[in-house]
Length: 191
Image (tube, rainbow, N blue to C red; front, side, top):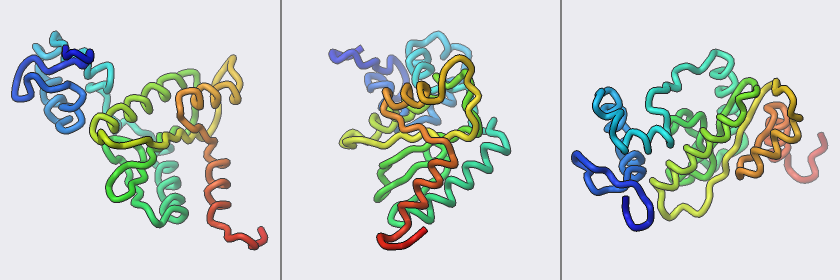
């Protein structure tokens, strides 16, 4: 551990370097290491596993997720033509880039259920990974878009407020679409 409580690599070609910096520049190294039985006992595995779950694979996305992702991508391409919109950029559902620097990341779920805190943690992991990689980045907009709301015992308002308290803007898909399309309208146009 360094003086500022940053965990450092204890072995290999990146020995002495901050673990999260190594992850940001060479994720494939950790994916390769995660396949080695001995690696699971190392501090590096524990730190990285807290940031990203190396054993999870985004290929688990459902056809509903993929269809919604395609719709959001298409909408953003139309409403934000001045930026590059990328799908599965750094394993993030959608990123909006300005000169190849991320300015917004979007996580998409066809429905939000009682596991909504995991979406907050996932977006926060992405945010930390981006800040580790782009050190002089001031801020990044984090957006969570969901289709249906299936959370028991907590109101939709309260869940959206929980996302907001973590600097994540949560939108129902239909509301987000309406908001973005209104941005395209020119002043004086009648709807």
